[in-house]
Image (cartoon, rainbow, N blue to C red; front, top):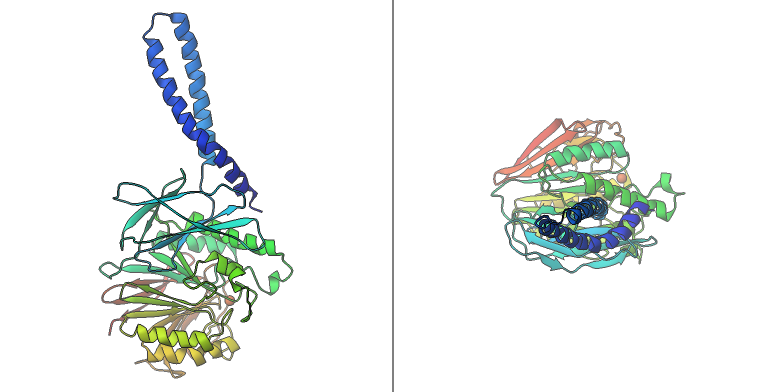
Length: 447
Ligand SMILES: [Fe+2]
C-alpha cells in the first residue's frame, strides 16, 4: 500500500542533498562562463561553451527531477489538541523507514525559521508512521508559514480569541462513503474559506457490515485515502490549510466500551486528542465559543463518566455565549426510528443537560439527510425555550429519504453541510447542498 509515497519518500531523501549540491554546481558553472569569455582562446571558449551548455542542460534536467521528487508526504493535515488560538498540531504520514522530516515554522511577518520537534507512532498493523508536532505559544488570529525539510511552503491561521471578526466553522458528518460526492462537497466547503471544519463521525467508513470481510490493511488504506483527499482539497483559494476536528461515529471503529487497546484503534491514532484514548472533548475558542465534541456511544457510552464530564464542562461554560454540541447519533433522528436505542440514550443523558445549561443549537449526524427540528424541551416542542437539532450527516454519502417525525420542522433527501458563523451579535447557521446552494438558514442571538 501507498507505494508511490514510499517511492517518493525514498528518492526525495536521496535527491534533497543532491539538490543543494546542484545549486552549488550551478553557481560554479556560471562564473566559469564569465571568466573564459574574457580570454582570447576561441577553441577553449568553444569547448567551455559546449561544456557549459551541457552542464546547464544536466542541471535543469536534474533540477526538474529533484523538483518532481522533493514533495511533501501526500498526507499532511492540521488539527488541535489544545487552545486553537495559541497552538496548532501538524500531522503527516510516511512509510516506515522513510527519513524523518524536520518541521520549520515562522509567522507570516516574522524573520527566522524555528525548527520543531515531532513525535512518531507506528499506525497499528501497517507500514505507516504518523508524525505529529504541536506548535505552541502562537499569537491568536495570526498567519504562520511552515515547511517540512526543503518542501513546499504551507500556511495556516490560528483561531481568533475574540469575535472582533466573524469565526466560520464548517460542520457535517458521514464523509468518505462515496468518493465523488465527498470530493464535490469538499470543494464547496473549501471555497467558503472556513476557519476550520468538524467532521461529525463516520469519517472514512472503515468499519461496518459491508466491510466485515475486509482486511485490516484495507481499513488502513480507507483512512489513508480519506486523508489524501482531505490534504489535497481542504485548502482555501488563498492557500491556507483548513484544519480538521472530528467526533467518532459507528463506522469509525468496531464498537466496544471495554477495549483496553483503544488508543490503537485507527480513529484514535489519526486524531491527536487532548486526553489519549478518550474520544470526547471540549474545544473552547476564546471566551465566546465552545464546541462539545461527543462520543454518541461508540467507544464510550453517552451516560456514566461521559455524562458526568459533560455536565461539569457545560456548567463551567455557563457564561459562554455559544455552546455547540456536535456528535454522531441524533437525539432526534430524521431517517432512523425515534425509539432507536442510541437516540433514546442521547435524549436521556444529554438533552436535559443541553436544556439546563443554555445550548441553543445541537449538531447531529448519521442519518444521511438534511434536517432541522422545531425547538424542543422536555421531549415536546417549545418555541420559546427549546433546543434546535440540525443535521443530519450527509457530507459524502448517498442521501436517504427522511421520515415524517413530529419534531422535524424541515427535512430533505439531499447532501448538505452546515456553515456556522459566530459574531458578537449572534450565530448564523446555514445549510448548503452539494451544488453549494443555500437550503436553510437560522439565526441565534445572544441573550
Ligand atoms: Fe453513522
